[in-house]
View 1 (tube, rainbow, N blue to C red):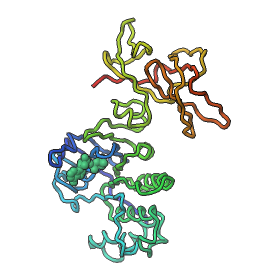
View 2 (view 1 turned 90 degrees about the horizontal axis):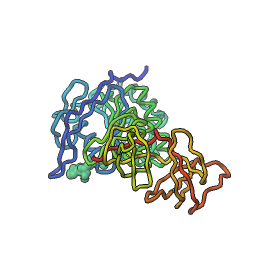
View 3 (view 1 turned 90 degrees about the vertical axis):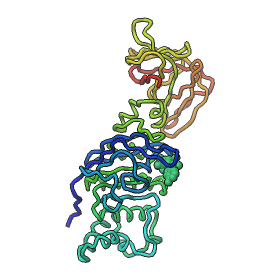
View 4 (view 1 turned 180 degrees about the horizontal axis):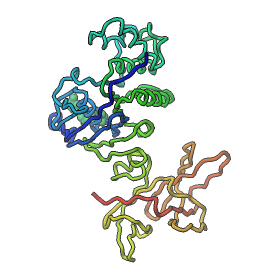
Length: 362
Ligand code: ADP
């Protein structure tokens, strides 16, 4: 027998707001999560990710606006009538029950016939690769195994959507990488619409079809991971998703062509519609670092500066370079035996003109 889920459904968040006392924790949140999508809520601690996830599950105060699962408005339904599955950071397994009993619990509550329960539990445990541990108790399992049991217990009742609240935070780094792959593989196999709450951009980037970046209860940007990284909509997204050089300045078209200028030292031709006050964003790997005297290629901008410091990050060496009043980060790929430039060295940076993103001031 193979484990099949119900048909995938989407989730609609329509102008959802929520306050705790005087604090507005969610502010006019709108999103459409597609059937079968792996979607992440990403943002710093306190940005409202869990509150939004819990509102979808039906925990906590009823928000303003509407939440739909498929076509059904669930905004005012209690959690047990929503048929959503939620996995928590803390696993929340029953310590006195065996693994098998833990996974069977939701089925027993739903009065599924006993002979079907055994088969369903076996299949769910098989899916998470832990059938052989069915007779243990949670305390006899590692953290990763406990989280797999929590997953099995959640999917065995065939929820309409899967909600994961920081599920990997209690695991060590290597196990987190393995678990996020396993969760994604399971999600793809089942086609189960999934929302994953995390503050870790790497976790969101590696698992999700799309990400909503939240800050202070407001969606800052939504999109595929690469699009958010390459074309951040604002300063917050640019700096939250990886390291970014963010330069303040202004765009003018004094020479007939738009140009971003900053502190008299930097002028970079741009193709943006933005005019006036602006900031220019590029990643440390967008620019290349050379000892003085390089000839820039067509379409490259040349910036002159001096190395202030450097950090060895393993895959790259990250140089901090003073260019006028600016301090810019530039990565150089590390290879075995590479020799590094010393602080104080005069350097030139080349930056392809089409790499930076120009953001208007808000
Ligand atoms: P995140 O998941 O992004 O870390 P949360 O959704 O947990 O953020 O919290 C968002 C904000 O709401 C925080 O400022 C938090 O202190 C507040 N908050 C969360 N739950 C409650 C609650 N039950 N009572 C009062 N304030 C809360």
